[in-house]
Image 1 (cartoon, one colour):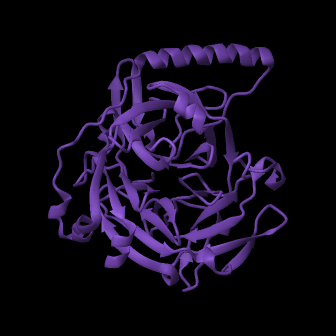
Image 2: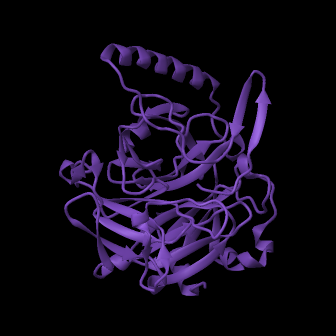
Image 3: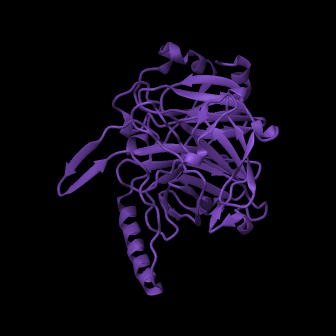
Length: 389
């Protein structure tokens, strides 16, 4: 998601391409008259057709790398982590971000942006074979090309949710399953949320969207709203939030009564640490992945779910009701596992967590070691029994 990056300028006459990782590009759709929309729709369809003609399906290809097990820092990680499937698209300029599991199809899906200007996409992998099933390219609701960061992804009862920009995008699982390999799919809706859309998670009819915050003493900051800056129970300042939204059990969507000016109101808030890239729920625990930079270690954090007790405090947002808030802090920490760089999304799969890395992408082959070209599975009970510190 947010990383230290190099800025390259590649000149390919007569076009100049700038390859940089910054904030997500604009993701708003176009507006206008009915006739204008018809005309622009034709142009968009033509553009999609031309883009489709230039698309190449993503592949699962390994990347030669130094075995991370030779690094003594990762001995605990190596003891509990089992290699999974090869991450699709790493050598075709896809940059993997979020990961989720569709239980009904027994498939893992991964959200990606691309470093070569193509649309963002979702790849699907069959968990029985570990093989790539398809790549689906993303469109905005108005069917214009979606090039957002696609920072996180999760699956609810009927929908797939992608966190990007300032909120959440929604599509139906059925529509996604019906889209063929190398096909296009348009989001049904976009919702601006209380936090930026850096990662997403789902648990118990609640969809979560969280933000990447980073406030180093020097260097680039990834800032959040001042109202999100709170001291935890130990007095340490926290800058990021994850906001939880109850979904209607019938429609599997936000309820209109809980929306204000088209913006849904959170039902729960978790105050989180810096550099969170992904979050997953499993029983009474919450797992978070934290990372920043190609040459820096990642960390997998396991905490007991603080929502099993009374809130640490309440906050007033734009709605008329107080929202309960809990801190993810040292008071509920259970385990910390140092891991190779650039861990991104995480998801629950059976009794394990599946960890996704972006260090194997073409974009990040300079300036770091141990590029990870596979997902890794960690049995939660095995991890907690070791109680890594």
